[in-house]
Image (cartoon, rainbow, N blue to C red; front, side):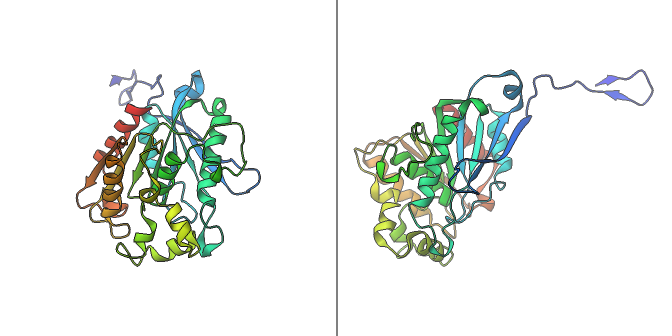
Amino acid sequence: MEQDAYEGIDGIEANPGLTGQIEFHPAVPYRSDKPGLVMDVAVPMRTEREGGALPAVLFVQGSGWTTPNRLYAIPRIARLVARGFVVATANHTDSEGGAHPFPAYLEDIKSALRFLRLNAADFHVDPKRIGVWGTFSGGNTALLLGMTAGDPRYDDGSNPGAADNVDYVVACFPPADIPALLERDRTEGIVDCVEWVTGGDMARARAMSPSLIVKPETDCPPTLLLHGDADELVPYAQSERLYEAMRGQGHEVSMVRVAGGEHEGTFWSDTVVDVIANFIEAHA
C-alpha cells in the first residue's frame, strides 16, 4: 500500500485488468412470441471492453418447472464469470396449475440456446463453445437438452437457423425418473410440481425422464451429476440410478455425492462450485 503525500491518506493500485468485474445485460428477451421469456447475460468486463469471444454457459435455475428466480445463483455465476465464461441465465414458461405442461419448458430453453448462438457476437460468445448447467428442475432441463439435440419433436420453430446441441451438461440434484417421483421416490414437496408439468399424463412423465429415455445410441455430451445425500425433495437415488444407466450404456458421465447436502442450502460450498467450474473448464 502506497503512502499518499498527505498524512493519513493511503493509496492502493487500480485494477487495470478488470479482474472480477462483470458487465451485466439484464432481462434480454429471447422469444418475441412469448413476452416475459428473458435471459440475463453476464460477461467478463475486460472482454466487453476489449473484444473477443468466450465459451458460454447456459444456466437454468430450479423452480419445480414454474418460473425460475434468475437472481438466486448470482454468487455461483459470478465465480464462473471470473474464470472467463459468459453465463446466460434463462427463464421458461411456468407450468404451475398445469397450464403449460412438458415439453413447453424444454422447447423454451432450446429456443434460448438458439437465441444465444444467433446473437453470440452481441455477448462475446463463441457459438461453438456452449454448455448447459441446471439445478433441480433446471438440472432435468439440462439433461434433456443434452440428450435431445436435433430432435424435431422439441423444435417449435422459434429462433430458427441455429443448432441446439451443447458441449457438456452439469446437473445438480435433478429429477431424473419422473414416474418414480410419484411412487418409490415420492416426497410431499414434489407431487404438485410433477402433476402440473406432466398434466397427469404418464407418457409425458416418461418422455421427460432422462433415466428412461437414455439409450446406448443417445448422443450424450460429457455429463456431471451432483446430488446431496440428504436431499429432502429429490431423493439422491434419482441421480445414482441415472449415473448407473448412463455409465452402463457407455456414456461419459461422472457423479459427485455431497455428504449431508440438502436440496439447495447446505448443498452449496466453495468446493462444490470449484468441482463444477473445473468440469466446465475441462470440457468447454
